[in-house]
Length: 440
Image 1 (cartoon, one colour):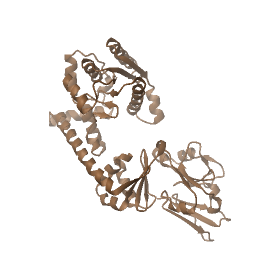
Image 2 (cartoon, one colour):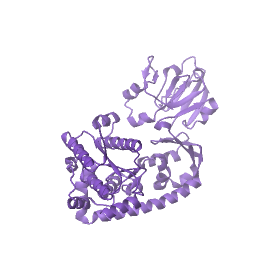
Image 3 (cartoon, one colour):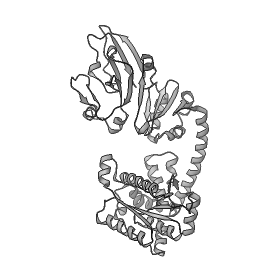
Image 4 (cartoon, rainbow, N blue to C red):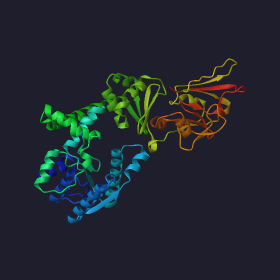
């Protein structure tokens, strides 16, 4: 296994074995085997251990075991304790996701501070196969069928060539001492269900299922490369860069409305998720002002173009509108009109339509994200209210909250876009002109 390990590390992970590696060692069989292989290969390394404080004394015993191994073999040892449950609650994410975020952030801090060239994790071939099945069950693009990648940035995974059974056999032969995590035997986590329930059933159908799925993963990687090349050619033909923006031609994009795979691959670099592909299709086929928010970009339809703009700092939109003409050109809105009021004028009750006393606004107007602490006077109320409280009272989901924008004039919020205008800008008996703004 040692020769396979070195070959995979250098050829697949593209890592120079003469560089310095930070080994992520939990104390389990995979990571202890990885540490043994690095030591046996004479590759320079240090060891990092995360204590997530989730299993009481067992977590502490794992930390002690890894520390003793590091000291015995003269490895520089890094360890840190995390309040994982508190972090998960604060971020509204799962314990598994919290642990992942915490460890990789900390690993990178150590890498930079101590001059490590790579971070090595002990994912094996079974982990990659389980990732394939997990992604297949929830829906995925081609990338999700390629399992775990051998390398990503500074992170390398030099055990991906080995099945779990092969690692167990090697550990037994070399008398590698490791800690057993009892939670690995539980089936309350999705990955464990795949490991202990799904894969055994698949082995009944085909005893060599792991090797067959490994071949599938390799074919999918080759397929992904072919699709990436094809999509790159299409992207060059139907889009152009304008500063930080990317602009697509709507007419040519419509040719791919029936091929969601191509659409997804075209917009995947902008963090479009697979589940958002249908939403993107609706934007392409829809009206000006239609938009999709990804984690890092806003994708807007503006007449004959789809404009992709990065969201600075992950959640920052700030558009300055200097006059009425610019307001009518703003792609965030599907229509903007200015109408003299009449005695029989009917104010729209549609939350996607704002009817505003035009004389009460001052240019420039601002479109921006709402912020904690923002206050406005919701239509029908004479008292100020925090937007955050308004959203809670109206049961707006966390995902929808992240997308919300406000229209602002002279440091006053005119409209919580798509929800409620400010009472100070409502139509009254003295109103002469109505500014009507619509979003889809």
